[in-house]
Amino acid sequence: MKKYIIKHKKFLISLVAVILTAVLVFGGYVGYRMFAAAPEAQHSYGEIYEQKQVVINTDEKGLLRVLKINDTHFFDGTCSSDKKTLDDLKVILDKTPCDFIVLDGDIVDGFNLKLSYDKYTAIDLLAQLIESYNTPWTFAPGNNDSEIDGENEDVIAFMMQYENFVCGNEKGVDGDMQFFADVMHNGELVHTIAIMDSGARTVKAIGKYDYIKESQINWLLDGIEERRVKTSIFFHMATPAFKAAYENGEDYDGMPREELFPFDEIPKNVLFDDMTKGNEYISLISTGHIHSNNLCSFYKGRYYQLSSVSGYSAMRMPGSVPSCTLTVIDTNQTDTQKMYSFEKIEA
Image (cartoon, rainbow, N blue to C red; front, side):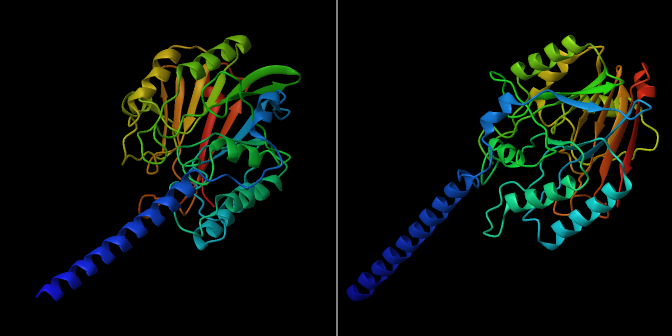
């Protein structure tokens, strides 16, 4: 009996040792992946503060076409779902002339611990596709892009190698990407597009969603006041006002309307709504993030537009097909409802 007990204890000790080793190894691996450095980039993130003013010209009629791609959730760029996403995006880009492309967050998957996950190869393949159209493009960070294998700063520095990528930020402002793309027609400023970072999570990969900070909103309002033209704003995560727009706004004819997940899951983003309320120059707020939804409603003098997913690796409603959103801005118009047209585009 004594020999049995001793043998049993040895077995338990060995088992505990194996479990502890496994936990330590896995924990070390998780820590390594969460805080790993990105591949060496040609540019450093600090160069973002020295970027030149971004200017985009309308066509001869004063129209500007903005194609928004969001929530592709690329895994490695080469798996079957990613290949299908890239194929669809090529079809969409081939048939959709545009003047500016906005990658509106969650371009790559989030907290993914698979050894084969490779977000930089995925970004490179997507960037090469976009570059082939010789069109200026940018990136508004999502909540997933920085959760593993490098921060948003690393992603942005990596993107700086591409000729048509535009970006900017200002020191002292929260977030990793804030800049205006000024829209010109016949040499005159007629519109502006603001790109913003809506945050990730308060604790990396596991915390609550972050929110747009006061310094960012003040930066936005100062830039709008300086320009005093209609302003279209793009960021990833919606504000509570999207729920009010969904319930009380005037739907844009032809845009599908779906609801499965809540629009107001980031209550602290009410700060953005409160500080920008009634601003006569803000004419469009465009987001993604909420995978099942499409929304385009005119509410209290501006459009609230939210796009569903653009990629096959992203969770989506059964039977739904990934899509992009084309926003056409007619800078000749002063009436906001006449200024914009929206289209959900599938391959």
